[in-house]
Image (cartoon, rainbow, N blue to C red; front, side):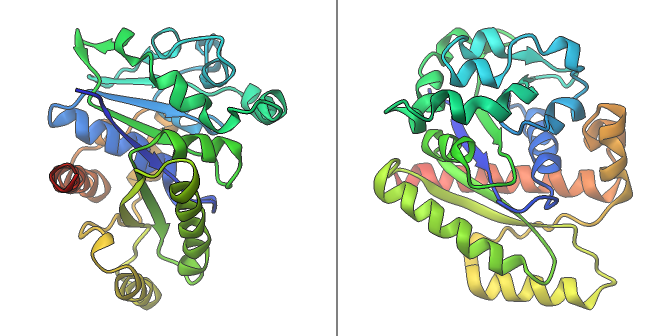
Length: 267
């Protein structure tokens, strides 16, 4: 069975995309899934947050996109059981120039995923792929949306949250109507929620009234342990399982899987 491919996308920076990618991957792995993260952000924060040093990134997502490596050649096992990553390097900054003239420039990642059979985690096939996108709607993000089954949108509980969301939804709709008709929205996860702050409550209420069922029940709190963990090269779930942030990501993982079952049933 082919793995489910989820893209974590939002053109705004600092909304918790990478934190969500590595902690959701860890939470999915904790409940028995085998997860591959593809780091498509030139900053490489997902790779660093999983303890992959820059010297260990000999093959990267850049090589995947330019067709010089397969997923199996680029993937590195992390210290998290059942989680592998295709790391990112600064080379990604130049990938648009390299592939811009190619007729299939938007399909490079999708084509790379056709060779997934070579990759196994603990001798079993990968069940989920999470793609961590850069904070912009560039060719890297377009490649990830074209390759994905569904989009998971992290959204910060802040005043301009809905403003950025409408632009992303337009892009998703364009991709759906032209390049990937099967693309769906897995859900919107509200991040950095501060229950002491009235604005957080107001933004959450606004997004729920606008997006309805698409917004997950689970809300990710603003949490010191979540922000500390990457500096130790660990997901928060390994750094401090009992903290509010880790517990929220475990709940989010169960919601994601429940929605996946509903989406598969509908298909």
